[in-house]
Amino acid sequence: MNSPQDDVLIIGAGATGLATALALSDAGRQVRVIDAGALGGATSHGNCGTITPSHAPPLAAPGVPMRALRWMLSPQAPLYIRPRFDPQLWRWLARFAARCNRQDWLQSTQGRAALLNDSRQRLADWVSRHALDCEFAEKGLDYVFRQQANFELHAAECEALQQLGIATQVIDGADYLRQEPAFNAGVVGAIRFPGDASLRPDRYTAELGRVLRARGVQIEEYCALLSFDPSHDGVRAQTSMGEQRARELVLATGAWSPQLVAQVGLRMPIQPGKGYSITTSHPAQVPSRPVALKDRSVFVIAWDGRMRLGGTMEFSGQDCRLNETRLQALEQAAHQYLRQPLGETVHERWYGWRPMTWDDMPVLGRSPKHAHVWLAAGHGMLGISMSSGSGQLMADLITGRAPAIDPAPYRAERFQ
Image (cartoon, rainbow, N blue to C red):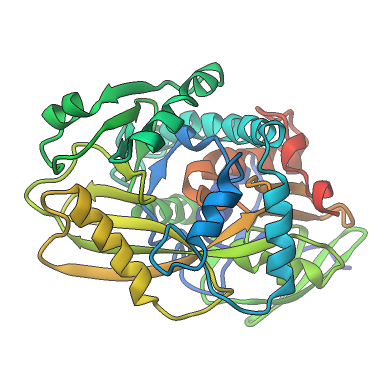
């Protein structure tokens, strides 16, 4: 190869790719970012923007397989699997189910907590240092329950979370309703995570783009990666806008990563978990902080002039249709919990694919087979939450600096 045009070429202008670009720019590297669509326009766009060390426990937990069997054939349940012949999905589900034990749960919890805690503190620093105008708020997050057994199950996990540095407060239902008049009667309890935060995700990615462009970083939208060819001294990438050359290539491509890495003989067992959201105008009465309606796995967050309901998990492949039943499940949960469940105007009904690994941890680090290819994908439902920590970890590994957290739990070798 001739001298590479770019030092680092990042594929994917979502939260993880942009955060990696910012951390590399801070380290003095010359970076280019390309994306097949608009900046921040895919999975990073329509989520609820919560920054959640509280979500350190993975989905793969003891008891989940039995609950999932009850849910999986109900189109309105928190988890829905559309019946179809899909051997890759069933192999993924088998590996996921095998991890639903206490030992693996604790291992994933520790790995997720390290990245989430680092991201939480780093993001606050970035918002201040780079003046990111993204409605960042440090109000915490509440899990709210109407089912006593579910409340007690989650309250029992609080001690383990406290040991990982994640503060919790258990609140009686009557006390909570006095604090939060936006809720209907019937709340049996709540768990508050005062260390959590939130932001508006579309503005967050737009602000990262603003900072990067002001530094001279090239961000090319609607520029799809078609193929790439690693060699001993760099990578040649073929895109819809022509050839790009770089010393290092970072794949931050979310749910599309398995198809791309398969071109160079790698396995990345990521399934697209389809999530939904509804964004409306701001009702007169909303919860005072972001909340998870935990019995229904639905989030509610209010911003300036907007409120968003988000959640559910649907394994239906990369099906590009809006499933009205799943959207109705969001609305029904809001009606059950909230006095004013929706604003008068619906601004957006959205879906996106969360890149789910079976151990519920991302893949971060160098490709096991190619010295100049780097992987940054598989963040599941926590792409925004983990973005700043993931970006800094990737930058540290690429530049050879000592990382702030142990990178071992996120290495791709665990899947090869």
